[in-house]
Image (cartoon, rainbow, N blue to C red; front, top):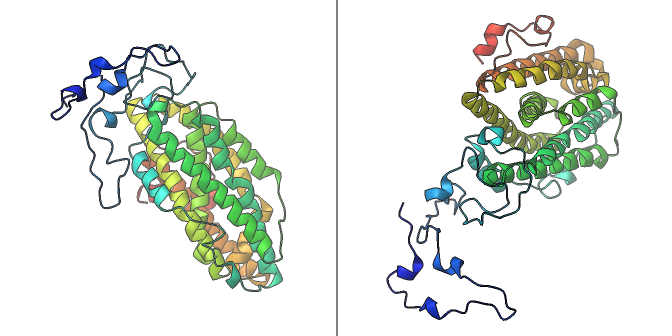
Length: 371
């Protein structure tokens, strides 16, 4: 694409030679910005049916995301950067460190589908529930309130370390942080809204959260959070129609599910992109998942969360043994199968290496590939 100096454009009659060389306070002025030294002057992105999206403005050099950015500054990608610009100390300076091919589209979807836990949930329609059902949904919401914010804390830990040339990835992670804050809000509100309250917190959940937060690299953090942790929660939200005792909880699960699906889509495709560009990254991710799967299995034995789900799935404590536990086991099989299939899509097969008790769960690895 040809770069154009605005001083040569047709119809421009300004005489820039008359501009002063110093400001009233004595600062030197070179008016480089006015002359459009390296700017793609005249490049005009065209809004689409949805308005002016991040995809629409990715034109010319502005749409080129460098593999290894030259600077570690907060200057906008495509700006004319002075060589002496301060170094911000970013450590994630390779495109493979953070990028996914779908991240720009996911950002636009995220900002278009923001919702309010105050306004968009029909709280006034919350019905009076039997005590066992109310206790069960409150326990589930207590655990979800506890674990949802890890998906905000983890991006916040790494985001400020990412090179600013990967602005679309950083912007998407900002939406994830907002999503997870809203999830923590909506589940806390549900636990309190019907008189049940916040119930039990156990060590297994905290152990899983700590494992995710203490990941040594962003690749490992993404795998533990998006492939493993959020992937399992996404499957719970997908089962919301079965779990929810009323239309209010169905609405909560449905709204949270659309957010969670974006986060998992980013993580899956980020890992896929990274491994395609550098196959050696696969072993780094395997090592994290070797440990994460063991911790997740321990979390899966959480008696409070699991039994509360069984009560909801069974429709009450009187049906927990005859119906609830069987449905809970079926849900768990779907979660593990979905996780393994997600790993396959990410380009990292766990079928022969997984630490998950597939035999005990009755999972045939062949069914994973068909998923």
